[in-house]
Length: 473
Image (cartoon, rainbow, N blue to C red):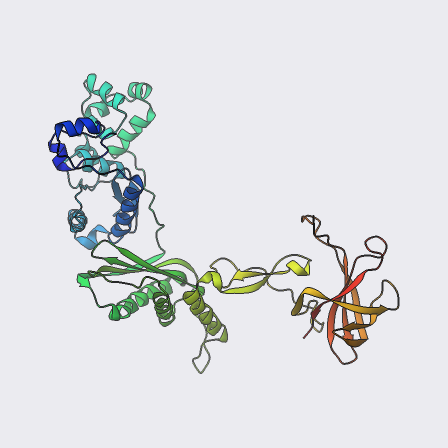
């Protein structure tokens, strides 16, 4: 067993990562040891990354134990780069964590200065000036590479930068020199954040932790109104929203909700938030208080100005959309379903359940009959189709009467057949499907039916059977 990590006291005793545990205990008999847990470390770093989103939404992991924050356009909110760096370190200290931080023009330069330098903030365009004195270890190259560079007298990054890149590249590989150019700020490699940047984001910071959970809607209301005002100027509406609460103890709570159509209605969004909060299995707990409350619009779509009536009432469609949004917030969008038409000639597969509140594009609409023509398909279908007894004038003709549920219906009008064959590309092994001839029938009492004859004479069945598949309104 070997040492994986050490605290400052262990380092002061001369212990180093990688040495055997037996050797470490021989040097420090009273050494306290804990089993390394890489998964727990990763979970901790993910929690810290979420906590650091209160400073900037662009946060990425920097293995093995670092975080990279893109603070472009955010530093002025904290009083500048130096003040923002101090705020981050103070927040970590409040969580009983120690760390080192540096601000530079590129992620690689900031990492090298934080891990191997003493510079807190490198002014814009001066990364190379502060990176040149760093030890060659700042390259974080393999141990053999670092030893070889030191033996030839290249002890700092500046020494290596002054040499022609051809020989080091041939000897140590292109990755070593690429790392050098990025640390010196000559090449930039943008970081990939853990979460995509929201389309719109507003937040409220508190001088003292916010503890009054009953007044949280009074804080959210102006935030939502501000975000909706920004969207209105852009001619857009939100589809997916998120409220994030950053607690003083480092915990981050997030409430996600969405709407079925683009929306800028502040009161409707507040209702969705309230329903989502009430449905939480783990209630929203302020703990020691919230330091930051943020409202994000994650997905937007084009939304123009809507015309209202003289009574200043919204259209009925908006009432239905509001109902769907409230049901989705209470029960989950996966449970709010509706029927949607699909491109198929098979009536059994012509409809399926889809999520009503899905932000994806709408499925195919239902086919509409020609003006003045009756519908081609009934609204009510039997599953499975109901067997009926029929009498037809000719074997391939429509029935002149049929018996269903002990009642006999005399046919006044008939239209058809509409021949529907099974979809040949589907696997029909074990469930043989035959060709169906559908008829639209109307009896003498005005009732309309959708019936079919299953199987073709002689080729598929000696005596085809008749079924009632649906009823027209």
